[in-house]
Length: 327
Ligand SMILES: Nc1ncnc2c1ncn2[C@@H]1O[C@H](COP(=O)(O)OP(=O)(O)OP(=O)(O)O)[C@@H](O)[C@H]1O
Ligand SMILES: [Mg+2]
Image (cartoon, rainbow, N blue to C red; front, side, top):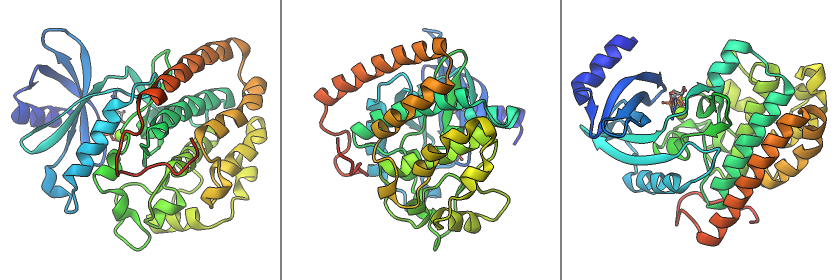
């Protein structure tokens, strides 16, 4: 469906309006949803509207309670590196989400346009995403679908992570096991997700590792093979390619990648704090001083937010996937 047809589709579905919002144009499209730019008719505020492309009947194992619980948990996230979720509603039995509009592009689009990123840029994005994940993990919410398409780069601003828990809430992960039907791209799945086991915070760190590898080399570790073969590579223990594939200036980051991409969860960083601590010397060496100062300030603010969150909440989710990590 091209842009014009898609707008027609929206117009017929929504008559160009969605409650108090006017649909302006389509921003992007994924496997299960279309994302539109919308404007509040009175306040003029721009918002992203993500409408699932088919109704609830498309997901045979759809668990409404899990979907709603995940949305509630995601809506509680309040962090500069997280795309804020404002509202969840439905139109013609299609769920839609209203969220912060990020003026910029996805990391996926950037990588497609430029190929490998300079290590300093890749490190800053890694750090922003780790901060976002740390905030969610502290409240018991696992993202389950960390990948370049879910990392939005605000123009002259930070990286922001979106779609927390959404793939799992739509039961997409369950269909991705080596023994099951494959839905979506398996490129960024952790080994445990490839084996249809329950992911935890360390699974997000693995997917972040795949993303980091792609930022540094311009391509994911495994591509050009069928989905099943890629998932077998995740489950395989051989990670010797990391040292071979990294470009010269990024070679010193190999130990970070080895830990992010470890086959066993126990050999990975156990939480985002461990990762961020490990990044400090790399940051000092690779990222220019002025950029570091800005990021340090942002980090301090994020940490203040984290402390405030911890004192306020015990857990966002009562029975949804929960991090097994030490707090
Ligand atoms: N809040 C937002 N602000 C600006 N652009 C967004 C926002 N959310 C999503 N987008 C854009 O819309 C695109 C489609 O997003 P969507 O989440 O539907 O699919 P995806 O993440 O690309 O892929 P998949 O559905 O396979 O996970 C994104 O790649 C991004 O470019
Ligand atoms: Mg997405």
